[in-house]
Length: 488
Image 1 (cartoon, one colour):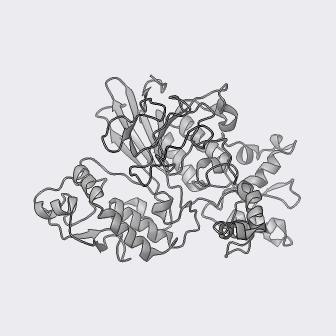
Image 2: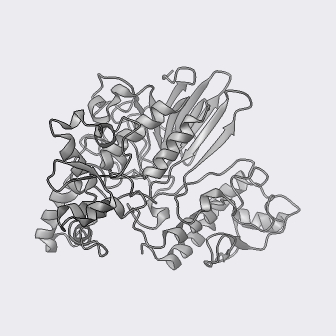
Image 3: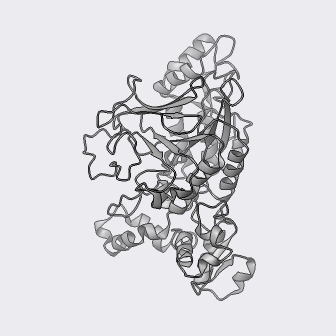
């Protein structure tokens, strides 16, 4: 169903009219008298642009019924969902950014058909203002919102990353061996043969496999003895550097020469170089020599926004998990098919950007894995993950709170043991314990005590709202000082 706009529109109608979501809107955006509510949805509608209406199925319930009874939502009469970022509509603001299932494609990347329409539907459904700058037709929906704590130095920045619009397909080396085995015996892997044909052989557009060759090409060049002395080293080989991923570089046909991907190179004879030039020029991140999650333009935007901020706390919302289980391998190979570990250089660059460019403390907000936990990436050497994540150059700790999911169908509380599974933390990233996670329905909370200068990170039980208890019996709570960014 990827790219099927009509199917997506029906699913959004179902989502925004869900009674539980309506109850959530009642709380965040209380209806008031004096507005008119028509019973229609201003949202992911008929394809006529922002402001189109979508009629829900069945009787009005929850927030819609209350809106009809009381006269509607404040702010923009007749609009549903209300504008979540407008305090006149929603005194408790709603901010949203998509991930793969909102995008309409499980583990999807930049190749989604009709993705501009999908983006419009998502922003309509989440209540983004019609005139928002996030609605540009040829760009992702990344954004920064600044929240005031009531005085100087008491600000919080919320950074929403778009990790679908610009994302490259998986790097070739991650699934090459596995897909070679799948294609050798397709009758044994009927669910995976389509993916592997697309990945290795023919993506249906370029006549070659869709997998991203750029990280593998650069790794080969970076391993050469004389590469470190090259002026291109930082942009090609050092993801902790601000120069990493800048410019458009391709590995020459000799597999030893790194060069700029200028138009003159197309005059060479067809061969390996042409395939690499196509990789360098076939995406919105075409000025990047690396396999991207954010894309070069969004990486530059992120660095600029962080550098210009004076917020005491920066919350970075990431649909894909930045730090999952960086060393776990299954039958396919490293990573879960979709988390940042699949794009290791980009992962390292993201962590160093948010830790080293921002002014205050950093907390990553994420989900996706169908369980909840809290992680802490500590700067410096000496940890089991120091080499993998190159933490020797981090200037401050990074916290990550992962909440996933809020319902019985999305939270995998199946009683499976932690030991030996993807969920077991083998690197000491969980300060509460290697098997300290919440596998029942949950949500995350960040609470700031400005007087004490402390931020509290908690996972909450989705039913009661109480602090969740992990698989190991520990409460899922971690506090950090906003003065030092260290745990307290």
